[in-house]
View 1 (cartoon, helix red, strand yellow):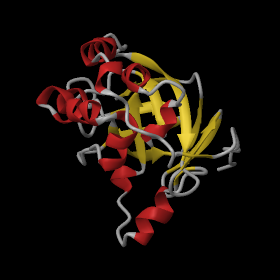
View 2 (cartoon, one colour):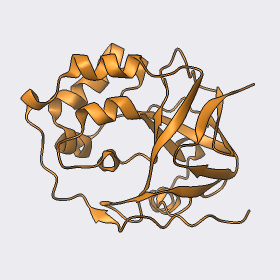
View 3 (cartoon, one colour):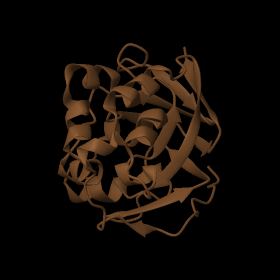
View 4 (tube, helix red, strand yellow):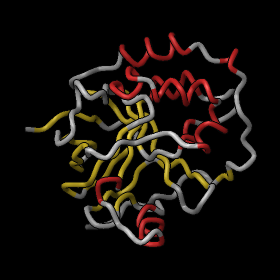
Length: 198
């Protein structure tokens, strides 16, 4: 398919990020904001790619391909280096309301390391594994493979935020985000809709 340039803001290094203090985040309010997300038709609020380890670039639009993932992102390169290319983690989505509430002042959502930040309910109840969603002109399928937090996420957002994603409620809501694989290639642009497909 014809590619849409993933050029956007210059890539930023995120190695300088420091943990948030626990007093700066109201997790109850963050989870309440998430719960108000639309369940039928949402929107793409931010797109970011990872050109290299420790770098993020915010883009206006990007091509999404069933073999290579998101244009400009290093998913395939990293997966190949690790010796196992799992298409079930080609694409990651995170709820924009939650990430907006927990992101440190002065930082961008993209430090989370996900590619699509969506105003949409990505919980197990609303987006069970195997369900398919159209995002822009692409179609993705939610994976069984869980998207979990790590030490890097803890450093960037603080231990309390990481812990909130690991509770039973946090896992059910998928506060840390969700993995997906590309079923149909397409183009995703900021502001595009995300909705379920039969």
